Image 1 (cartoon, rainbow, N blue to C red):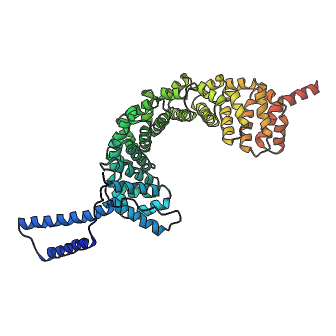
Image 2 (cartoon, one colour):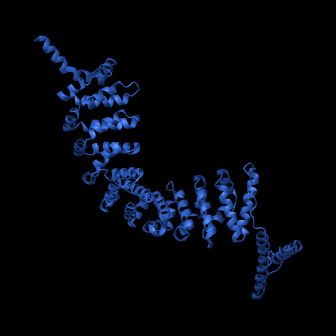
Length: 503
């Protein structure tokens, strides 16, 4: 079969003739009036004829050369890029489906390369309005490319207001609900960008976006993990608004997030725990509901060192548990009875640095929570483990360990347990001699040692540590706490020497 000839463009004389007819017709409209139904019918027919003709000239003209103009090179001037962008816009407006798709592809290629190109596009009248309209296109490819373009632009905070003002939010929600998988993911990612700082959250709620997003969370298998993660990302942003948070709870959001937290998919797990953190940090009612729905046990299972969960997920679960137990003795008792202290101890012994830091924070938090928690920590073996962190490279780690240790030895049983170990006491005294500027560390160490001098055995351990000269040196340097410690820790020894002299 022979190749099909491309459609013929109207000749230049024909085009000029059409334009002349249009001009004459306009003059007629100005000079004449139409009073009958028949006259109006004639007028309508003439208008339709001219519209069809002009559409034919534009559409056929573009479709005969469907290749988008070559993109300017890296060294092209801004003016050249503006001309290129305007050319793409004209193809969006009057091109056929294939041309529109190509133009959108070209736009996406341009704006993902340079923020300056995004600025040029946003300054070109008509691009944003066409983009918003194309999100409702019945052509899947056009809808997908439009969603990609909206997502790319929404990465920049400076343009989000213009996008929202052009009516972007409602069609985005429609795409999330009914679009193709690619379109849904791009639209959801765009919503996540738009609501990053809780901006436009009310617009999402007003257009039923919360309900649509929660429905995705209910259907992981049907929607896929990527879309669920993106939906959780948007809901996490929306949850920062107190009233929207309440609406989410009414719509069953907490149950959805708890169910997702049981997922074997790590990215889904992380997203759901992030949402639970936001919901729990909002108010006490949410915290109680999460505990009531079993969320605290799900988080404890994630925290369990024996579970095949990423360290990042454990970190988030630990943070969420600490939020849930905030000012709640009953929740604290639940986690302590469920092996929480044993988990924290294992993280101190074998965890990565970030997990160990969180475990130290949890230890400090437990010490501040109750006397019973301090005693439980001492019995579990935390005292000796904390000593190991007193010489860590991180200042924060050293301070957390010292703070927890000081709090724990305020309990007499823990203090007695600690001084039984000569080596641990010796480490405290030895660390006073570090050459680096660690006045903060020294203050905490001196406070711990001072507490140990409340017992005779504690004073003996300090004197017999082999490093008592470190205390004496600080005392000579007029460090007041060191002077007090030196006097108290050596008082028995001096008394013993004097008594021997008088005998």
